[in-house]
Image 1 (tube, one colour):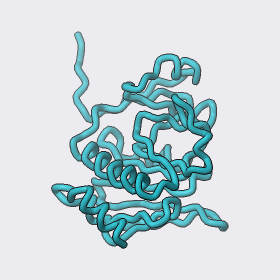
Image 2 (cartoon, rainbow, N blue to C red):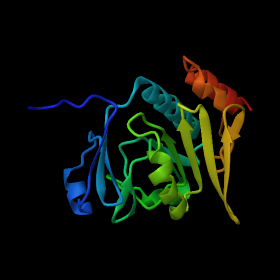
Image 3 (cartoon, rainbow, N blue to C red):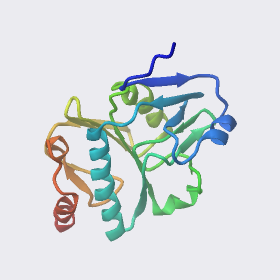
Image 4 (cartoon, rainbow, N blue to C red):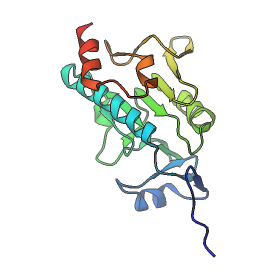
Length: 204
């Protein structure tokens, strides 16, 4: 008898080598490689996809206008070592480190990472990804949590990481100069038009 999985769900398969992961992974795969395990998520919720699209449009269009780096979406692995090839919802690589980007993955840590908390396991980003991102020395980490309606930002400084959590108000990026968002945008029932928000960002 088969029992179909009902979302949200999270499937974890341990004991997978990096070579096996990359031999099977494709651009349409819905898993990532975390600490020597393949992790597969249930399909993203509409809310998750709307937030992803909104932030991708904002960052992508902003970097088109002010090209200090490039942004990639959630199907581009970030290889931190032979056991970690996570696929952040969004990552930014500054121009001076663009040579680390290959056709299939980023070789090393991004300069900025954005994760959107998923229904599959709302604590995964905090419990597993965030500690590894801090260890990797990523310059700026955003965790967008639509359940708590909070944005956690970790910024690397000369003395270590500085964490802030906001439910509203303006958050400015340290990695992408001039880029900011109003956190309250993220919690609106209907997200505001991305291009209207971009106009505000560029106008400031």
